[in-house]
Length: 288
Image 1: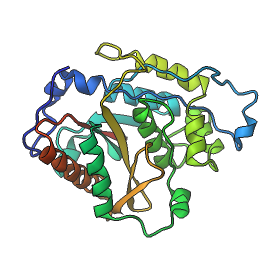
Image 2: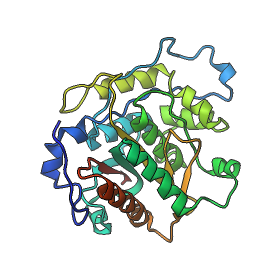
Image 3: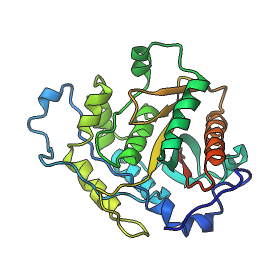
Image 4: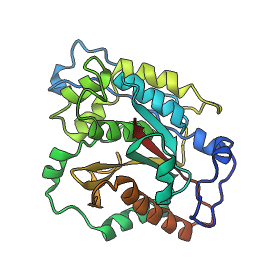
């Protein structure tokens, strides 16, 4: 893999479109997971098309086209688009194919990076709402499978953005997931996301797609994927490694993208101050 060296964040920390397409790192990032169709109780799994064996899945590329197709299959809706964000500046919003409803940030999972995240979250503060109240508003999923942070991030985005049938049809896998998992705990959702046969089959298809060489599902991938979403005018970072949503602050008006870029840029600036070479990527999940 080629190293991606970034000395300055502005104005285009992620490089040009051509550069990104030639950078295998972005395209070989792992985003595999397995999910299961939710029911009101985990005791009601009998009769479901479940996987009995230990879950494994080929890593997906960090590729907007693959992610958009994957999301479309889950939702049976063609309104979804995904695009690389080539700059963490607010102006980059004008180049997106639609309205951004979730942001994915990929960054190196080094000890320093993990410590930076924890420090940043503490500095920004936490929600004044009790954790159980937050979990009533924000759908959170615990990551249960190695290297599954990408699909967990995608599921976090869809679970908190989809509010009606305009983004997921009644016959779609995602509609059933949301309906049946409504009262599940984050841990139960995570366990569910390791057993559904249909979801596994989709992961196999998309995990073996793309432009780069396939990566083994048990490979030690040194990158991590998180999701940023807006819920009730509040910005949250959703990371399946955590125990719950991380509250970052309020979102004023229609400023989800700008607010998220502020937090992403702040995080990457800290990374750049700690590391001489930083490998990261950002993508926007959009609705048209």
